[in-house]
Length: 376
Image (tube, rainbow, N blue to C red; front, side):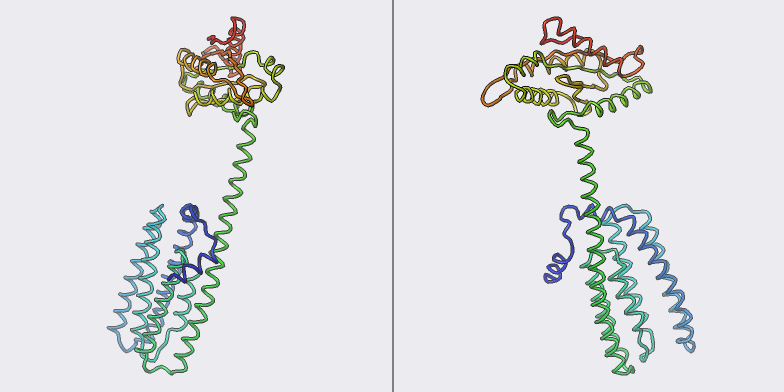
């Protein structure tokens, strides 16, 4: 078992913590394929009734026993298919698939036992083995163990029950099973590796696209939302207001005397101040709030489900925290303040621009009133 585990870990791609996601991602396809194989197996079981008619033509009682046995297997198969269709859990699906494969193997071994002592079922045996390796949705190690158990059961029946079979035919059956195990192992490893490699490539591509989209929506300097993405969310929020008339407010935050900071300490200091201001504002907002850079040293904050008075409280908190948070540049403390304008959406607003314009006017009013203040 340890050797098998080492072999599979060396050959198969180790998905580590993505293993569960990989199985869940392929669950729908595994269910569809498994049900198709189960239906085909059921049709094949019914189709071999003609063979039983020839084998048991002089034993009608045994023939009808075999018919009942086949019908029982078909009922179990139908139940398994129904249960697979209903489940959305990988663990439940694996249990159903494992149960069906074990029952199918026991069914085939029992059928083999009932055959005449001079009759080998080599063709059915090797088809079953190869199907377990290639078609089973279970993990590789489980399929390998299932195939070994079925092969061992078949060989025991062939050597101890089929006493009237030519020894040469028995040796040929053994060689055929060895060949099928070799081919099945190789095919199963290739298929599993291909599926895992494809899934890993899919996840990497998806993550790369998400990262590109994220970077496209994030201002590289302040790590807040870009103006475009901010306005996209704002338009959605305004449409929600028009539909449900739920309140929301907007803050416009502008750094005071920012040009003086650039002129006195350089543009690098200005970048540090903007980055620090953005961080402070984002720490004061809620998860559902939207913070973005409108341009230059001006930022916007959308507060859903927030009235004007509630928004004023948030604005005052940002102003006070920022006033007490100097920016650090090479050990030098740069003190800065902000002016904040606040506006709440109202029935007179035809678009988000109207709300933002009022908040912007309030911000300029705060500037005129002496800066480092909130106007609403």
